[in-house]
Length: 492
Image (cartoon, rainbow, N blue to C red; front, side):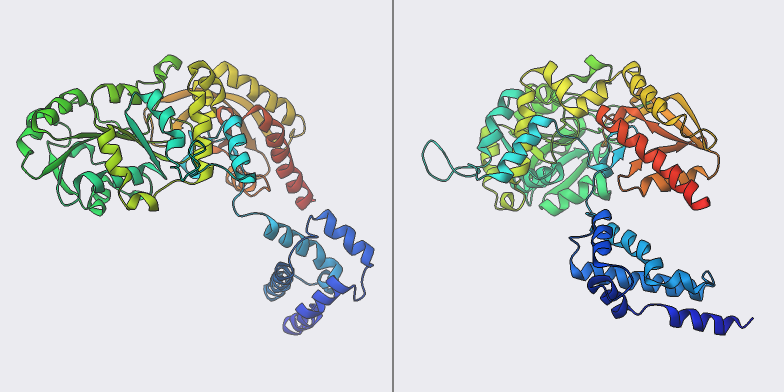
């Protein structure tokens, strides 16, 4: 057999791109126009723009050409328009999917940085929908009929919830820290404990943020122990700020010591120097009530006398991405006037979402029930087990002979750089595939039209139900079954 000539023959049989397009769009033979229409509708591709259709055709033809060159195709019949049409539809359907998509988080990490962090409650989502559909009073004062401030829309609520005199919201907590340091300490010194020079998400570090703000870092103490005398010994005429960074994303144990905020405040008052605390992941409720480790609440920090406090909106608070700055009115007013504030301001959607979440905190019991982050963090293993058992009932029989399905105890995580040592008792569905590797299962679930993200432990795929809502059980089951059905069809 002349392999080279066979490949040449197969390559000549491949439809040309322009020919394929004519056949596809203008019914240049092959199948009827009505059949074309039905097939486009079945693939949800009837609204595909022409440039995407052309791209899908080019990729389909190119993939077939490569398959011929690799020796994977030997039959001319597999290279006809009809034979290639299914691959074309698949490619076009993928191209029509948005890049920014929803997925099912079955990893057990509640505040998952890579998956959007906190989910918003329904009331907050309704607020976002309303301001997106309609004009709003974003910067229009309804009392005076003149230009207003977007910050005033949530400032009063924040002050009520935290006990602060004034508040400002920017686009994230790193921006909040940058803005405060740039306003209060540009060109001057900021004293901070060496053990608090943390690295935050995306490899950004407190010293780097400080440098960008124009402030000069003064490190005091040792990595594991810092004393009040270290701060006092470093104070000079050039000192603008005492900074305390709450190390929420790691823990140091053993021979350690750090100065309480109240003592730093007293030292600052003695020398006329303001004190700032960066809480990172700030909480508005005492999480020890639901069995979690103690984290200082924002109100407690304000009550300790901090002049300015910064924290995130999308971590333990359970809101949208935002950086919240609260504190003394004189300081917050200075920060508001910083020109950088305009570059870091939040938009109307963030404001609407944040206000919706903050209003729920007026009733702490309602907040714990209605804010998804708090509800997931406080869920008991028994409650989670009910969802896990329901999922097992949906998939166990259809997966007989294909996958071992079991329920197991596991541990979830808080995530988002908060409470790193906190293990949350949970229940998971364990999948041990019998016909493919567990890595192939993980990849297959991740590549579904509605991706499912779990985690691999002990050669099994775990679907942790702490981070899966009741409404997601059915779609999750369908996704798992679809993967194994497709696998069986391919092998058949």
